Length: 204
Image 1 (cartoon, rainbow, N blue to C red):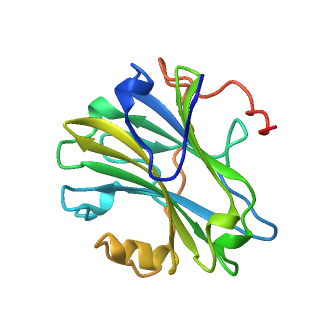
Image 2: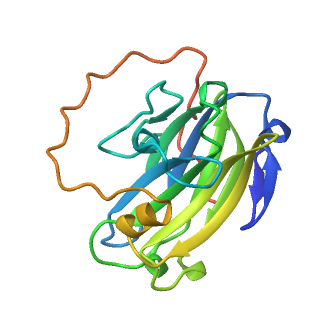
């Protein structure tokens, strides 16, 4: 049974699941809106001190592949694979964010969520909707953070700027436009890691 989180709730990941190889799914949508969903790997000062840990559409995995962006699947707008035991000690927080690409604001989003799935079973979900936001163009959805052990926090904090402002907030550099690298060929299924089998039913 998935534990339902409210904004501000926190829990040890070990209290949610014994799994260390986790699927993180994000669902966010709104009429006419387009979203960029990213993961920032931050150091102990909550800074993006290593740009290789900004996981987004142009850089879908970290160097050791502890954090990988998987794309839309199983009813999720975007999904990630997080292998906790492979995250280097310099990375102490993973912040999952969504920013609006183009016009719009977060108050226009419909019901969405960030969820954690272990071994194909959903173990945690933080649901949100546009009524929690106003003119923000980005939202910090949830964090994995290391405080003696890995924990999860439902954040749900809106942010006025878009992706650029979020990058600056985390101390990252906004790169000049560069041609996107060619996508890597798809790999075979990863053993021992199971995303959810089907789309989650809409909340009743």
